[in-house]
Structures are given as structure tokens and as C-alpha cells.
Amino acid sequence: MIDFHCDILFPESSTPENLKKTIELAKAASKVGFTKLVAAPRFTYQKDFVSTYDYDLKRCEYLNSLLRENNVNVQIFLGSEIDFSSEVIDCLKRKEIATINDTQYILVRFYENCSFYTMIDSVFKLQMAGYRVILSQIEKYHFIIEDPDIARELAVRDILFQMDVRSIEGHHGSTIKKTAKALLKSNRIHILGTHASKPDDYSQARSSLSKIQKIVGKESYQEITTNVESILTNKLIVPSDFTGVKKSRRRVFSLR
Image (cartoon, rainbow, N blue to C red):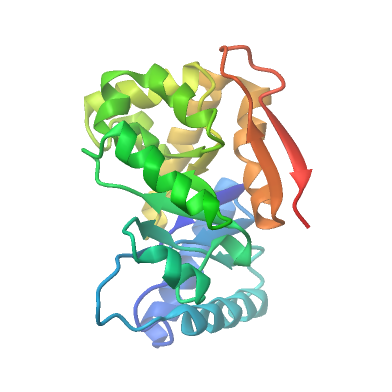
């Protein structure tokens, strides 16, 4: 399995304490069944920001070598969770922000009270710039909570949806839990992330993943826990029309 959102790039990760935390977190992920983790540090544009892209890439390379040395069968890939603003397109073009494993895919976050029309306009700009948009934590947006079926209107615009697995346990409240369940039942989630930052998070994720599998069924669960493999290799995932029928959910093509 692949965890699409893991907070494993600790600040000052080269300190002995944080290196130990990294190994412990990776071991906890492995126990749950994850073999690949996408590190997605959050990016919010500021005028005086200094890009950490090259530094973060080197950190991932170093941490992967450290995990191999400690016989931990987990690999870390670099990504970002990007707070959308008009400036991020230029930042992406200058490679000041990490895409997902240096592919065309980006994980994008909006204000939770963002309107549907603001979101599709912003996503269109990103798509015109050549990026494939994955919407972070779709279950938290107010217009989705009010009407989960509107996710169809986002999907037909080739937007992929990521869900925080903790939402199904009520970690973010009962309303978001209800929305997450509705989206899963109607086959509208493509990717899962744990947002784990400590070993206990993975212990809790085991329960969340079990509940998700019961809701969507074995076949769909297999798909949403492996879709990231296609993303990491820059293959094109096209969301199908969502009818609640759990078959032929997506099509995959090579972008290379």
C-alpha cells in the first residue's frame, strides 16, 4: 500500500532525535502494510519565502538510505500539500515547490469555505499550466458537505480526490465523518492519506482503513490504495462518471 500523505519530513530531520522518530514512524507504517510514503510538507506562499525544494529532496534521499541501512522496507517520495494562491503557478514552474515525485501531479488545498466556482476557476488555471490536480481532503469543503453529489461536477473536470483516512473515524467531527462516508459509498474517493506524524497515528489508521474497506468493498479498496502508484510514475488517471457502480472506476494512460 501507499500512504499519499505522511508528515515524515520533520524540521531539522538530521538531528539524532528526529532521525530516530523517522525510523520509528516508517516502522509503524510498515506494520500497517505501507511500503511507500509520500511526504507532503505544506506550502503556503509568502513574499519572502525561501524554497526548500532541493533541501527536501536531499532529505528524502538521505532518509531512504537510512531506512535501507536499518532494514525498514519503506520508501519515501517527495511531494507538497499546496495552499492555492495565484503565485503558486510561477513557483511550480520555477521548481520552488515539489510536485508529487517530480510528476505533473500536485496536491492542492483550498480554504474550506471556498466556493465551487472559485475552486474550478483556480483548478482550470493549474490545468492550463500543465498540472494534474489532486484535491486535498475533499470531505472538508463546505459546499461538498452541503451536497456531496457536487463532487461529480469536479470529477468531470479531471480533478482527483484525496481523503484523510481519519475522517471516517470522526477525527474531524461527525459532519465530516458523514460526508466522508457518503463520498466513499458513492465511489468518489481516488486516493487515501493518513497524515501520520507519529507511530500511534498508524495504529489508528489500521482501524480507519478497515472501516473504509468495509464501506467500498475489496476491489475498490485495492484500487484507492494503489492509485498512487500510477501517480508516482506519472500515468494519467481519468476519473470515470460516478454512478455508484464499483467497476471500471478509472482509466490509466501513460503521460511519458
